[in-house]
Each structure stands twice: as C-alpha cells, then as structure tokens.
Length: 517
Image (cartoon, rainbow, N blue to C red; front, side, top):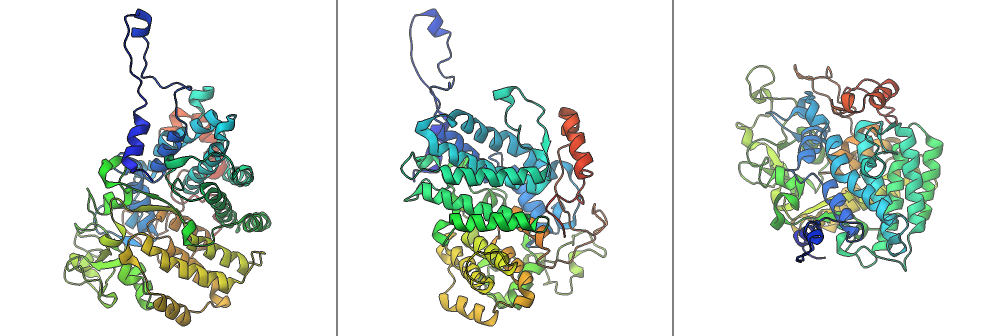
C-alpha cells in the first residue's frame, strides 16, 4: 500500500494548471473539482480515515471513545477531568460523534454513492461505499439511537437541510438489507478501489474481503438486536453465516496509520493516549481496576501485553495495579488515596503499554475475527444454526483475541502454549456461557470502546459495579446513550422533536431500541 500521507495529499490536490490570455478562461476557476475531474475513491479514503477519528486532534475519538466509552465500561480510569469516569455530563463531548460524523464521514460516503451509483466502471466501488455507509451509521445509531439516516448527507444533492430522524429499528432493518444487497452485487471480476481503500486496498483479493466484511457486519448487527427481535436476529445471523464471515485473523479489518502526516493521518487513539497529548504518560489515564483484576484473577496471558506500571515500566502481571473508577485527587471520601490498594503514588498504577498499542503509525481495528467467533458462540448458545458448537466458537474466539494482538506489534505476541493453557483452565461452561462470551468480547474489543460499550449495553457483561460520584448525572447508573447536539433543537426542530417524543428525553439514561437489559 502507498504511504497514507501520500494518498491523503493526492486526494487533497485535485488541481489543474493552465494559462491563457482569454478573459473567460482566466476567470474560470480551473482548480474547482467537477464531476468530470473528480476521483471517486478519494471520498472513500476520506470517509474511512475520518471514521477512525476526526483529523482535528482526534476530537470524537478523545471525547466519546476514550473519555466516555472507555471509562464507563471500566477498561480505563481517570482521577482528573475525564467526565465519563464518573458519568459527569458534558453536552458537547457527548455530542462529538454526532457533530463530526455527518460532516466528515456521512458527507463523503454519500457523495461517493451518488457519483458511482450508475457508473459501470465503478460498480464495485459503489457497493463498497454502501457497506462503508452501514459501518458509519451502525456506530452512530448505536451511540444515539434514532438519527438522521435515510435523508442524511443529501443537502448538496437534494437541498435537504432538515433530514428526518429515522427510528433505530428501521435503520437496522435497512442496514441489514444494504449489506445483503451490496455483498451479493460485488463482482470478483470487476473494478477494485486500489490504495484509496484504506482497509482492504492492499489485500490480494479486496472484493472477497469486502464480501466477508459485509457478512461479518451483518452478524454483528443481527446479534445486536437479538434481545428485542430474536426471530429476525436468527434469520439474519444464519444468512450471514451462509454468505461467509471472517475465517481467520487474516480477514481483520483495520486502517494502518502514518505518523508522517501529522494529525491528518496518525492513529487517533495513539495521539491522545500517547503522541501529542500523551495521556498515559502524564498520570491522566490508567487501566481500570476492573480490567486489571479480571485479567489477573484469571491468569490471563494478555495482562503483561496490555499493561505497564507507569512509574517503572514494569510489565510483570503480578505487579499490575488498576486504578478504581470514580476517584479524584481533591481530598475527601473520593480521593484516590482512599483506595485500599493505593500504591503510594498515583504513578504506581498501571497504564497501557505504549510499545504495543500506541504507535502513531499503528492500526485502528474496525472489525476483528475474534469478535465474529464470539458472536457465533453466542448465536450457537441461543440455538441459531451457525455450524459448530458454542464451545468451539468460544475457543476459536479466545484464541483469535490473543493471537491478533501481534498485529499491533510483535511485542504483543502471546505464545501458543499460553493460549492453550488458558483455555484448558477456563473451558466453556454452558451454564455460564453468556457471561463468559460477554467478558471475552469485552477484552477482545480493547481500544474500540465504542463497540465495548455497545456490546456491554446489549448483554450486560461483564457485570460492572457503577460508581456514584456527587456530580454524576445519572445517580449511579452507567449511561445508556450519548446526547444529541443542542443545536439540533434549533436547526432541525420538527424532526428533532419527533425523535425525542418517540425515543425519550435527550439524556444519558434513555435507552436505544435494541437495549433491553
């Protein structure tokens, strides 16, 4: 694959030069991109890159993925200003993904679809755009519930500046249909997007990879609604399996970043947790006690890969101490020093191993094989026809979750003997299967905290003990959704009001459609 910075620069410089004495030509803007001069795949590049996090200092990644989702699901913890650790409401931060996605993801993917819909030379690119559109809206609706969907991104094309808010149930049904139609329409002998596709552009067979991705995403969507529509979930899960989901870690969907391009191309998580903001090295962000204790109590070989003591860099699993959520450094009953296991100084708590996970040129995983196998395990336990047993899929999921850490960095490799020993010590137990699968999915989705939070809301696993901080907005309840931007009430008042009437108040405690726990 070409250098990511080069791809982005090329996409930005659609400039044509020329000079003449003719007045009309002099006063014609030759730098203006027209439909004839536009290179469609560059919109895919932009949408995918912005999906990995906003290029404006990782705005949405920082606010929603890290500050809220990672803290609320107790993989990370913070004793300073990160609001999500204590369920403190910051309206702008909670709305960050909504604000960013429509301008920098939805816009570009809808533009791409409009320009390629009837273009036989870009028939596969159109189908890939449909799949990426589902990827984008899947996250958005999981965060906010009812959102602009069917009419979103059409301001330029149709003059629609006040799109309707579709119900999440309708959105899910349409996304499943989109994935099904797009996967079936992909032509192995047709066009390929090339290096402008940041996810599978370098694959030997990118069209087959996108087909597998579509069916794997179908599996995720179907399982997401399994608590509220079991019959439909079963139908769609079995359709996904028949179509062909991921079969190994070689299928994992991720974007490789490039430190040379600055904020435009760097890994977004890494730029905040390491990089420019350096939150894991300044005593700002730590691994949660809940996360560290789970790995430690189960003698999980991943602990030494995930964790290091901030003050010393020690990666010995026995020496890791997680920071409890819900503490501060203000003195009083919530002060960090009240932790019974307080290690003498806040820097003696554990944080993320920078060498494994926080390279500025490291990958952002979108969907991984471990998640697919664990969803299949859950589906099998529900009695869906997915081939194999819940135990076989569980074992494959745990194995994949440990093995794929080496795709971040070779230092993340887990020896095969350690994986085998772990599974021998923790065999799948049908009586406790739902909890075991949910806990492993929680670990397997590390860094993709959007997905961690969504799957936790759906399943209730792992069982988390909420914090009840004085300035928290929920009375000691872990939030169930993010917040619409306040400007929607004035910019799109009718449709916004209808969404509130249908879904419930714009608060952390209003549940989205599929959240039945």
